[in-house]
Length: 441
View (tube, one colour):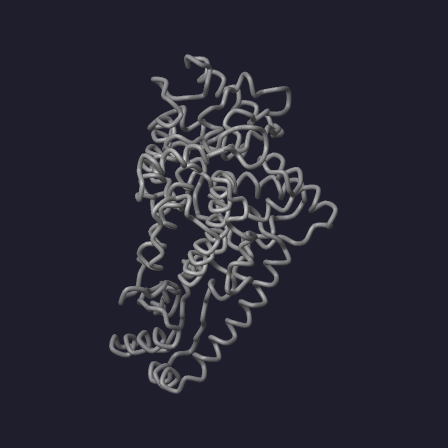
């Protein structure tokens, strides 16, 4: 499909593969690999362009394998780049996308065997295995966010976007589905038919479960009636790219971002939707929240129904939202052993034991969410209380020694306690070390 275009670009821009690449993706509409006949989104096209630029840069700058034209790309080049990126420690999902982009580019230029399977290219084939089961919840509620507070904050900026966020939390709509939502068209009895903006063109039904959910749809209909195209969109009418940019601008403005007032993203609303409906239908909390195992039949049926409502075709796709009991149990066992190892390390260190004796410590406890399966940004705390006030220099010495043993920086905080005054708490930041200093807040 792309070979005639590549041939003409080779003639127009000889010896300049970067210019050829940019011109190619400027003129070539990338077809979807699965589903109905259609083109991929602009975001996916940009990802293809970016990863192919990185391939050319790696060949030129790191591997000394400069190409004169894109059509010279061969399996030897693909293998060299893949091994190079594997050595950098890139994740399995990113390596998989690299492999997909190279394979599809090979197909477009008439080289369908350009990129072998990822497991055949890697020095360690196990690096090709992707782990998609969620082990740390990403719902708004798990981040300490009150959804109603988010909605109220957005209503002050834009009522339409406030309703769009409510639709995401209530029905699991993606961002483009919110921006292209036509409530009159989508509302069919006791279900919503989601088709406009659906990923991969996959039409799906989402059940309406309560009068409050029905009221939300009616509110959306009133707002959409004022729009020229009867879409639940902001005024004046915007093109999709403009509407998307405005949507994310408003989310950032109210603090709905990773390090904002509401530390999450709009996508976290889909996680909330999935966890809530799983608990409702399976009768137990989602595994990522420590829920007990439902019967295999009920679990599979619930997951399959949820997957269809989310716009996926496989029940296993829900593991990226709610995890699995098996993986959470394995993680807990691993974390328990790690916690025991850390406690043994602290309890047998002569210097730390001597310091705590000098401070007349009566209670000594390691609280480590990371050890028991928390995410990498969790805070581990070394907590203790003493029978007498502890001098600052002794606290600092304990802090330094704990930091050295745990390989994490420590800071001092205080918590009031009835009857004994302040309990000194040593907080251990579970963050990475890079570039000569500790990163984080």
